[in-house]
Length: 302
Image (tube, rainbow, N blue to C red; front, top):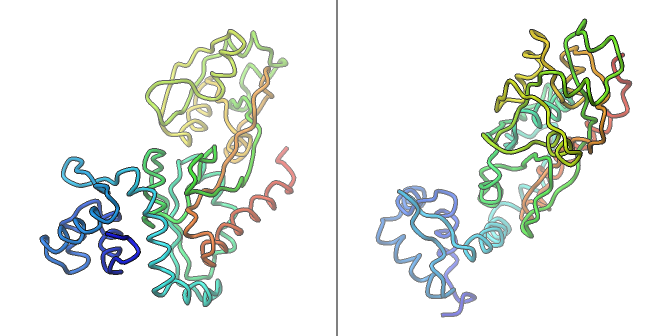
């Protein structure tokens, strides 16, 4: 069977299965019976000579081919439906729109405050969802999220990215900390007790990888998955937190330059190719980028 001769409704079934991760839920969304959904999927599988979806637990996941088709199918359906009209008619002053972001707590905290003034008084809203790097391609392709924020762009041909900001990593401590009395050397840095945040239960972060390249290791006495907990822990103890300067400044921590070279923290906006021409998505991407440029030009707190 030639895919070009397929009924358009079969692609709507594909999209529903992809978004819902379940044939049963796809049928409920489309108001179709389970046998009808299964029959549609069987025709798609025959046309593409691929299972397209395989069972995973109680649901289904796309095969590599299914994943690669998802973006094109979604874009095609939107262009044939109401997507083009919605793009042409987007007006930020009048839009009632919810922008969904996949982001970790640190990325969201660094990026979002700068855009709130622009959104004030409008009907637009932001919803931040937990970031899962393994699932972000699927989430962006299915429309579950509009944008993702990550420290690195993702090498996936379906995705596009733009660097929003970079920020220096500093050693942050409470005001009055004994370490502030002298210049921070490598020896003094390593003698301190540290608090570290990572979304992974194991493995090295950016700071510790830089130290390992120098043959050094710091003493981490507290490890937490939440970056926004670091300033509070540093404020209430003598622990040192190696964090972006923006985060330290926002929580009124004293800072010292790290005694070794380390690349700055970066935050990138990531979106799916199918939304590249969407006016609302494009406006929000530009808003994020412009807000970060304005913040970077603002004077640092002394």
